Length: 175
Ligand SMILES: Cc1cc2nc3c(=O)[nH]c(=O)nc-3n(C[C@H](O)[C@H](O)[C@H](O)COP(=O)(O)O)c2cc1C
Image 1 (cartoon, helix red, strand yellow):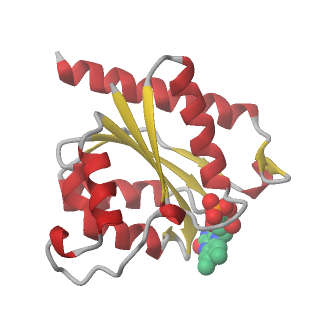
Image 2 (cartoon, protein in one colour):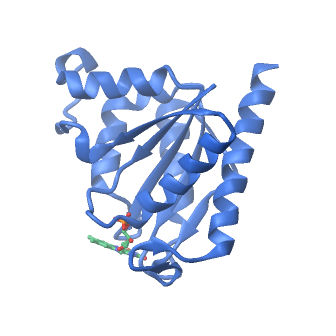
């Protein structure tokens, strides 16, 4: 079983990446293999509708890593009440890699009222990729961090539940 983790924030002190890393650590304690794709390390290009083979090898490699995983966890910042443009552009290029895959969503926002972005990200991947979103997602705002480290036991617990849910759903789908 391998879970691909996609961190889409390009921020140095990213809260969404901090949450994703917590989830990754939890997967590792359960003996699950993980593969972290940090978009800061991918040579991003703009999506213009060309076929995947005409994008650079960094994006093609990311595509293959996603496609070869059994499930995915995607982390995004909230930008203007939506996911970041960086993530949307990446999904526009790599959306076929998510086809028929179970995925979970982690979102970091500034305020209290952006949690519905979790549903936007699910919709994008359901519509673009026919992927399967987990109903429960994890959202946290700036008050739940201290010095850019997660500082909220409730969010920590929800991240573990998210990881458990994903493993359970993938396990069920393999039966
Ligand atoms: C361009 C921009 C737009 C933002 N828009 C929102 C917003 O609409 N709602 C919100 O709650 N936070 C908003 N924020 C705050 C970010 O969601 C917050 O800083 C979050 O921690 C970013 O995730 P990251 O730390 O993983 O990069 C915005 C930040 C930026 C830079």
